[in-house]
Amino acid sequence: MTRSVRRRIADDRLRIVRTLVPGRGTESQLADVEVHCASRGIYHQEGGVMKSVDQIKAILESMQPDIEKLEMKGVKAAAPRVRKALMDISKACKEGRKEALEIRDRI
Image (cartoon, rainbow, N blue to C red; front, side, top):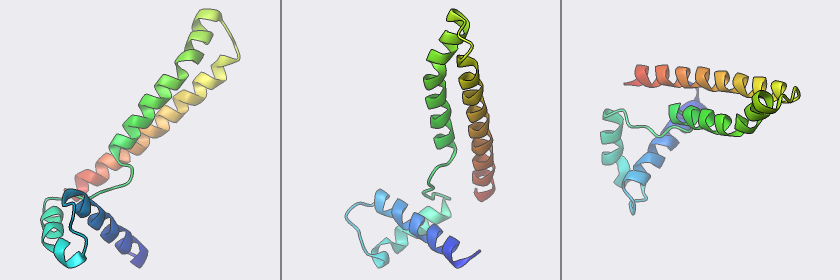
């Protein structure tokens, strides 16, 4: 692991600890809680599986008008937008699968 990766992981751990124990700000005060969180595999992570799920939901909501235009009204110009949205959904699914594997391996 590189130094920047170790530092980012340490920053993430402190961020989750500060979230769990409000009012405690110094690293020495947070050490006991950090060990507890680390032993249980509780780490704050930007993104993750929920981010992918939220992206998929947002894409589905945003593509609804284009689907209606394509299927109901027969607007051909909506087809590329629908195809692009479906490709974005597949990318978000792949990212979510990768994150799930990473989380599984950490536990």
